[in-house]
Length: 112
Ligand SMILES: [Zn+2]
Figure (tube, rainbow, N blue to C red):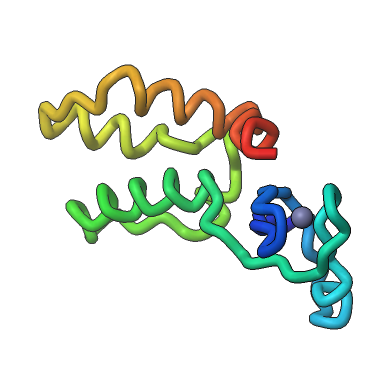
């Protein structure tokens, strides 16, 4: 289920919304704090983790992963960490913590 984060144009509150298919529903999204409908989509923390992975993935184009691999939260950061280890790159404890949060879904909760 796609979860997007929106920033309220009036009060600046960032909230997460599950967005189902139709654009009609999307227009009905509102700020949970001030009820304003002027919400601006923001880049979620998950997207940051995924782009990190795709950048690392570009180092080895001979081993592509299909989308379903990345949809499984248990695989978040796994391959990136493996590749980093092979290349002798230390991603550091911050990356480790980000991966752990992404896997358990805490990342979105902290943003709200
Ligand atoms: Zn608001």
